[in-house]
Image 1 (spheres, rainbow, N blue to C red):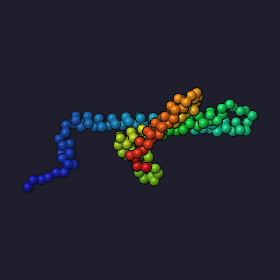
Image 2 (cartoon, helix red, strand yellow; image 1 turned 45 degrees about the horizontal axis):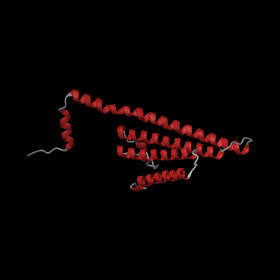
Image 3 (tube, helix red, strand yellow; image 1 turned 120 degrees about the horizontal axis):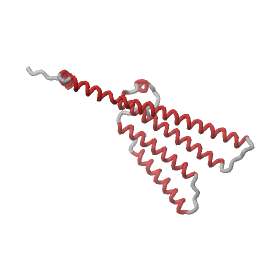
Image 4 (spheres, rainbow, N blue to C red; image 1 turned 90 degrees about the vertical axis):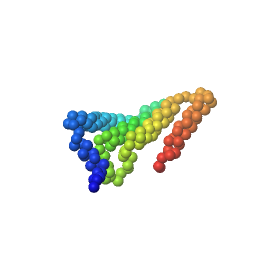
Length: 188
């Protein structure tokens, strides 16, 4: 009578006959994945730093609004500067989110699933199951950063003719089409 083995049993039998140096090398090779923790930790530190900087920028905007309306000091083009500063802060917040998604994604892909996140009823946006999913999430947020940066630059541009206004309109149309096609196949 012929005995059949499961794939797990075959792996266990193969591992029993594996030379010690091969086991040692494979163990070292597998454990090099922990170097990813450097990227995870510094992504989190970078994200936190960006959140702090953006929040301080918002605080300065709020204090300048108070000074503008209740103080004696009035600045020319205050509203344009205010909008520009707010868009800059949004840009920093979005970059912080990129850093967080990148850090969480690397951790879940290379180290371990985050158990506390599995138990949480909070948003599942930081759950990453594959490298393609990580790239897709990062691409979407980075595209939003580019759009916000584009509009920040547009605020400081003086339009002198119809051709420049047409180019501006075309740029907005291209960004809108890009967003449409990016979200067309997604689950929203």
